[in-house]
Length: 251
Image 1 (tube, one colour):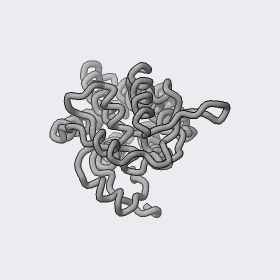
Image 2 (cartoon, one colour):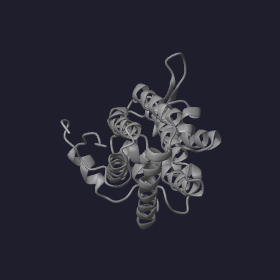
Image 3 (cartoon, one colour):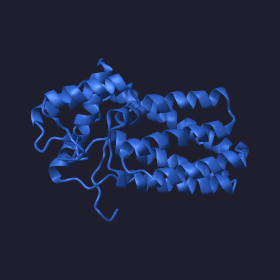
């Protein structure tokens, strides 16, 4: 997946290290850090409307109470603003305090642990994809295709992430590997704790991999499907979870 274009200032921020997510922090602090990182990197823009609290919770895989308290805390710090009325909601502040963003996103991280999670998922992703190509039923593959269509229609990162989670878990289910599929789901769940809000345009580009994967699965092309899965996971984590390296608009 290609990351969205960033300014030179944002590029220097991207090179500061792995994203927040690991460490001795509460779930609320983790959500605050993930939002602060997205705003700091320019992935969430000033004035951008955020999904409702229920969708924030689903999109970040946390409880509604955690999402509500995190959003309230960020509002108190001036990172987001709440507006009432028909056009109301929660918005990224026009000029979010940079010191607060820096403080939140600089929480302790454990980059080696994140890399280990990526390795675990990559290995398991290739395994479940291999067996989904040979063991998956036509009905399961049709459900995967429907989820790619749902992701293509998604209008924000929360809606996309919910369908994306269902998609990858269904690939594991279609492998019919039992306990091995459970290991994959555990790795996926842990990695989703590091997911940050991301521009929907970039996520739609990532969905092109999903579409190609389903096509390969339907052809029962084991080698092709595994290669698509491997490249998808490596690129996803290189951009979304690790470097978010700068790309040009044409990439």
